[in-house]
Image (tube, rainbow, N blue to C red; front, side):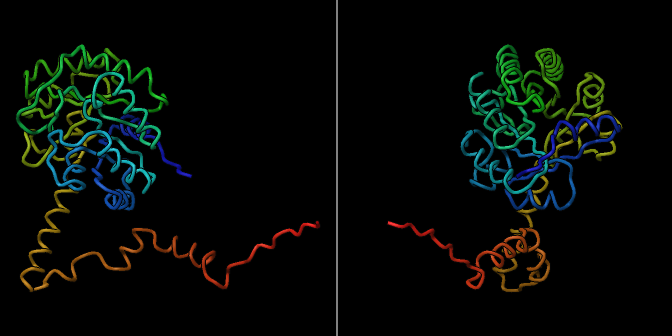
Length: 303
């Protein structure tokens, strides 16, 4: 049985200790195992890496709840690290948002991001986004807060209004969403250090940052984000970007016939350990070998 801890408690500890909670992104079960083995307290499952890794498409609303949920289910089954799941806009109206939150709770997720983009949504650092009226988002916040299955489930709310309506409107929306019940806030893609500073001192609830290499937000070190006053930082794309680059390099090396990178990958024994080969091999040896099979004697019945 899973002994998965709570994302809320990991964030609460980080806030109490005045340190930044670093949340790496998992896009499949293997990346989740690596995050767990490296010793991170939490992980994040975002739509951008899942859409790209699992389906080979961009994060522009081409995949819905069932598609992303398949990847989330794999990740949750692979490890016991608390998981924060990006649920986009909840995939519809208030009832869809509640259904999405409850479905992920049943899988084992203990935190979600709910955003105010209009469907079809886009990656937060892409152009062409639209946002719904704030009243619609407030209704989703109230509904998911009231109808979540477990009060421990953290409802984090994201606004994409910065790119659409300006920074001041993004701040106003964040305040409205907090008043509607949001327990943590995430203003997507601030565009300057000044905006980051203003944002960090604007609200009392935990705040997330989400810098992206090549994106709109200034790239600062985790320590600098911590000093500004942010409580958590999601590196949702770092793992998939590096994995994609590494695979591209080894395939080009293979295609060229040089095989110069052959010995630079993970070793066979290390990979076996990562996927828990020894555990499954033990089960096979204890129960599955012919010499260990014990026939069950059927009870005789007299006529």
